[in-house]
Image (cartoon, rainbow, N blue to C red; front, top):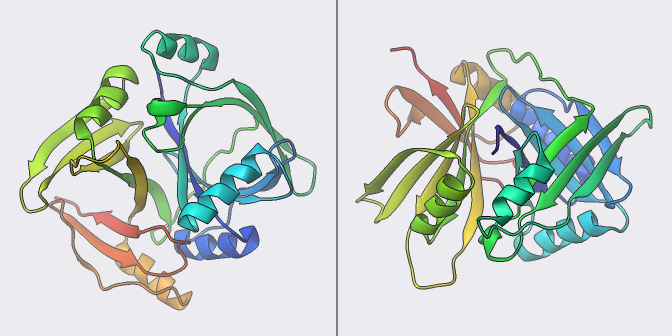
Length: 280
């Protein structure tokens, strides 16, 4: 049903300041800055090999501006949505309806670059009601205006390693994402020291890492943090320090043959990890 984790959305107060921050964190500037006249928002897009990151802020009035303002009011700056890509949104919506997965009206979207020269168009629809499980989740079909990707050097972020989602209902998460949406579950294990369960879903060489701790509260999934893959962690850390970005010491990762460091500033409220996979 889906062929890619299309992008992740970070709601921000000040787009220009947040763009400057993420240019320092990722090591390259956005490939697109523009606005959505019909939504009341403006954005900056940072593409990597397997997905892209969208910084989104309110700009006037519209449903998009309302969403951003709601997210900022409830949670402050940070991750506020996840988009999954499909090649046929109309067929997808029909197929999911047969599985009692509700989606909103399919809307035509248009982005205009800041200089007014370029445009991008797409169709998208949000999941509704219980189908969202508390997470802003949308399906998107791109029509025109492909982004391409940057050619990352060893100190820049070449791809997203994984996105972390918290849930209090791991069985329900599996039922939605694997059984209904068809996203491959590659790992399901209980981690005793955490008192919880870890799920790894794989989509287009991107991992959706789900940390499950059951409780009796209403079902709730929430985006938590991002882990970016880099070819040379020492170079990346040195680059961050030169940019006055606060960063931890390098340490061994939880996954064998990895080293990691935590980015402690300039992330607009998003817990952020850099990870290097070592040669074996």
